Image (cartoon, rainbow, N blue to C red; front, side):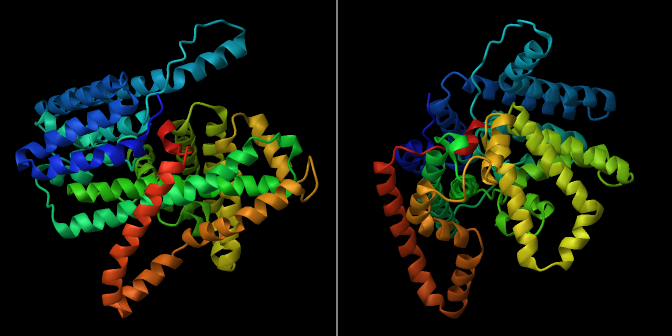
Length: 467
């Protein structure tokens, strides 16, 4: 079943918010739980049970870890049970077909492949749920004895299927007591509309350009057509994913929660290390806290630091998907980050910012080729097309695509920087009255335009729902 999140938002969200606001305080977490389950079941009517199982596993493990607080061995056992059970669910539904296919291919076997459909957002909610038991074991948080509150945390609909990955410690206090006021709701609406505009007006439109190029035979692409296509995807995935994250953060504020920031203008980074501190921030934080640091981080010499980085980045690739493209994509960035740690960082800090930013952006673009193509062979062919292996520099397709999308590309470039935010900050500082009245009007206009686009548009995917 196709998961139509925006359909849910426009048809169901007003009802949810009304119920949430009029409900007594003691019932608000129950409202979150019920609406979260309905939201997920909208797209996964059967696999919602998988999310419920994951929630029950970690809630029970948390109670047992707390019960045996004076018995380190038993606490460790229940932590391991939680992690193994969650990873087993993730492995079964996300990676079993990939492993069976590769074993059959390598050894000429015919092991049965059930080809299980992938539950939407399973990578997000399993990581989110596991953070609770891990942090509880480490003593970073207190046990949650109320199942409704814990389940509301796991199933909270704004970020359940595509992040940001909200750790339990991020919302621990707010699950017990949170403030809901007009100021916070207003901020949430602003954040939500900004994210919706990113998604509907930018990501969807530039994404259709990428789909047009993707539908062409790779060996027929001119250099410029290939670059136009992958640049379109580069901007599509940023505005799509950061747009959803902004919508989730905005909805969280409307509900009284402060979700962590997930993007910070990553395409303006001067290195790949900096890019990954700005892109999908919550995933990077998760791996740093629960994998990199426990492995020893950078505390045990250069050799082990390199080992730890390679493990983290291989897992980052695997987290995104069950294919060799994702594994190589993760290792690709891991190797670049290692090289930056060893010697490139010193060089990048000395050269002009425009050059180091171009270096980072170009490497990210090549990474997106690996990310978006289906096989390593396809990635190789596409990169060859980018360097003229199959055609000249420009052709009729390239001229048409560039001439009809040049303004959209210019908008994408501007919105990828802090330029608009800096203008807003300047107006808010120098002309506060103008800012006070113009911001809500702009939000209303954007909302009307987005609604009009949604009515007419048939192309409306959320790219990160597949993870």
